[in-house]
Image (cartoon, rainbow, N blue to C red; front, side, top):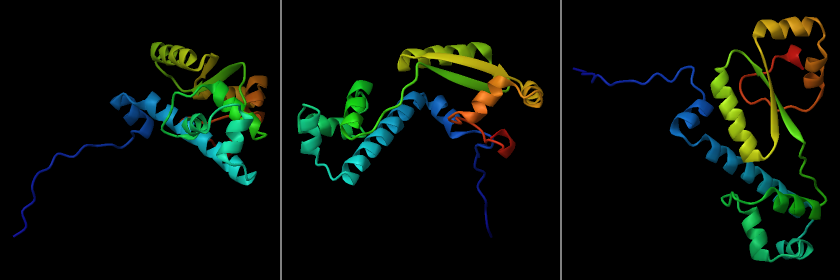
Length: 170
């Protein structure tokens, strides 16, 4: 005879990894570590491709090899953008920074929560963030009118943070 124990199941349908990290209060920390890991990985790739040793790059940066090790350590998050930019430049690469960040939000976010999140990011990144909020209906209307703002968004580099981009939006 099979006896099933009644176990309480948690319904995670509809939740996202981002919302999970937010609930746990670790989203910003996880994002910072991810960004640092990618930058460190890209710098190490460039060093390998150019067959440069850590000692040679450290000399070029007028620093010690141990300091370069800290820069390339993906777990060492509090490295300044200036340090990363100098290392990239020594390898013939660029870290692209812009004067401000434009955010297009599609939907109906809670305005106070969005404003607070953007202020927090501005302080963290040290850059101005401009946001535009459009409902789906307004987005479709603007697309139909061949809106200049949407054309600019469509034809420039962008990073999709949540959701999926429809092929027609490209």
